[in-house]
Image (tube, rainbow, N blue to C red; front, side, top):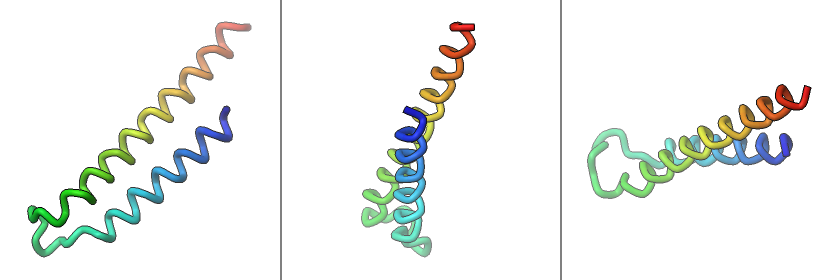
Length: 65
C-alpha cells in the first residue's frame, strides 16, 4: 500500500508541476487559466489525501503493538 501511495503522490506532483507551466502569469485571472488552476487544486488535494492515508497506516501499526 505504501508503494501505491508514493506512486500516486509522485503523479500528483507531476500534474501540479505540468499545470504550473501552463498558466499564463501575465494575465493570471483569465479564463484560459481555469483548467490549469483546477488541476493544480486537484493535485494538491490528492497529496493531502495520500498524506492522510500514510498517517492512517502509521496509526494502525501503533495500535497493533
